[in-house]
Image (cartoon, rainbow, N blue to C red; front, side, top):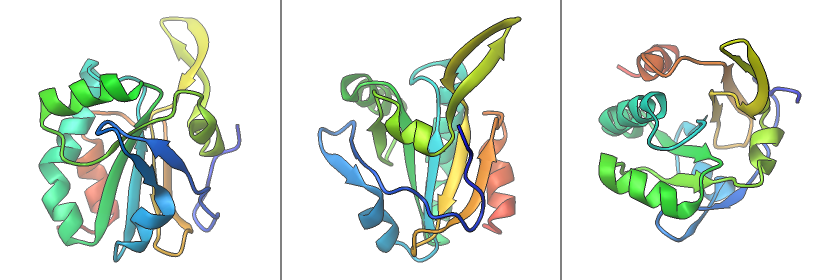
Length: 158
């Protein structure tokens, strides 16, 4: 799958969320000053994904104060996302992309290697979408540990 780059238009999406509602990227980005941090992760309640989600939770207030919204996207169903959000006290939206359509549009679904085995799955990625819908930052194959701290530096969130 082709990956997004700064300046590309971000594909809009509407996805079901952990709270039983639906989230639309266009509405979310228009409600921000700087944009939306959309992060793609493989599976709720796994060690790396939990670490990353909790890092976003712990940094959410400063990201919001800097003008950003955060949304996490995974192929997990809304029920699993709801349990994950409740267990980890996550206060930002978690969206379900069970058919991988959005993951594919964003280049976050592709070939991966693990212990010498090749398979297709979620490529841990983060895309920042400006209020006008343009991609301002796109990172692929990010490491869960320390990712939010590195992202804060790139976005100049102090």
